Length: 492
Image (cartoon, rainbow, N blue to C red; front, side, top):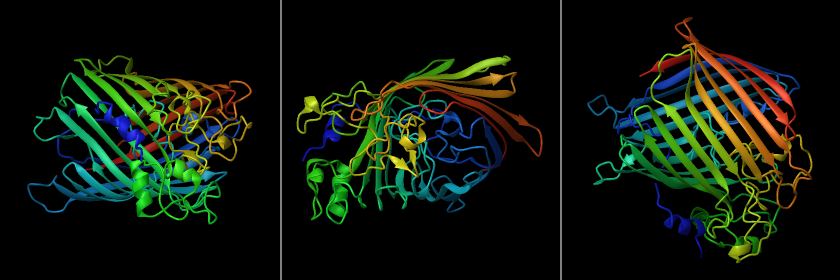
């Protein structure tokens, strides 16, 4: 048995998550934000622009106009009222979104019960999550897990932050988790599909070091359930404990009576993820974060044929504000490249010609790397049904466009000292898939500009609005406006 992605990890210096805060204490403490919010959106042609609905955890519809009422509450409580309040805590949270429009729907993006012990937590349910070394605010989104879809319900065990490795004097820290869950019942093609996910990252450098190195991996698997494609007569995909072990290790082959030729020459389930590396430089005035996500899906990365595929990013964040009428406090520039995929030829067992990685598509799980119809990973590999470019709808697969070159710029700052602004500007060239190439190369620009400010009404409200547009060949040309008002409640 071969463990391609595990073997490759041994060749990479492992170094964790970018969303660490050097000022955070070593033991987790909570200042939980609870809120109620009302917002509405209008559009010029009935479609919500890309950046007003992408990476919103599936809570913003693609069709407009619509109105939305939202509320969230979450709390954590010490088990005993003593000096170790932060050692052992229990918590729960729920968030509900009611969208009213052409397709009215109530969504529950968060619903969980949680137990925390020091820097560890175990939760059951849905919880918002970002995975990978990338900016999670004004970036384009991590390759494998961007926050574009509703959270998948799961059992999750992991750290809440970077945890120092014993005897290293805080020079080496790690962050990790292990999860298992289930996909939605009413998928277009598969049913009963199971979900497995894990991640492990290391940080070299103390929290206050000038230079910190990060690295590690995340691994996602769709497995089990039933599919009408490349399965035994009963349509069942390999299941059971022994095949679960094969799924989590990435082993070739499988066990059981329903193993097909496809299963025996491939892995059990649909595997994907990224191997990440980053460097963070802290100066007196700014933080510089450079990151790279190497994507893997079909073993090509082990043979080093897809090294140029992945997400390249740079984030610069100012630490001090000088009260100017216009300030840029943070900037992110990213390039996403997924054109290579190991090349246009696939020969089993030949590392030189191990192409057609076909990102986010799978020939057994033909509804692909999706949850309730939305891409779980980068939104720039979209569902075929989302694009106005209707040819080709690729062989019942999830996406007809996974060979992409994207340039993305995100900026945020302040205006007149009281207004907070941010913008995302994205330009992509789209090449379809290797098996069904686009007849031309659709070019697409999607952008958004948003403002928000606090007003002294009802104890403090946040008023916000945004304008977004899609111009190009991939999506319907549209302009959209969104307005909202939010009240936050703080519980300590």
